[in-house]
Image (tube, rainbow, N blue to C red):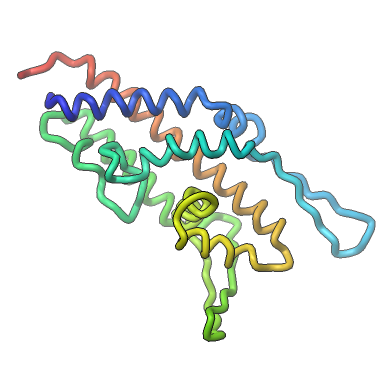
Length: 207
């Protein structure tokens, strides 16, 4: 196994372990699917409460998680708009690993290209006053919330558009719930591949 490929798999395992140990994972497991709708005495008024991670937990988790998304990190495989990082498909790796990484990536890509079960439709108006309708896929939601709060201007602009509604809190609650679901599903894929990376690193090395 090439030294760069070995280092990539070792980093894959290390970062997967970091995500598993994060408080954020406890949050997902304990509270991730709980949303409570609280009806008030006033008709038609609906408030939503969500249990959310702290900003510190969020940033810490997402900075590590992004390494499995971004292809230029050598271990990226989650982004359905990009190919799997070549380092994860190197010819020096075993057929078992190659089969697992391609299978997991294909399943995650299919999942992310789909729209959520509880579809949310956004009517967006551009600066010229033109209206268009957007029904985001899971990848749209993941990309927007992964980068929109802290980094890329394109995703930040899209998030702002989605939340420009009188029902902002309800929309934010839906997006956070779907975001947590996506993180939980993709994290299962990361953990699965980390298991096979350990096996790969333990295999007898030829040259």
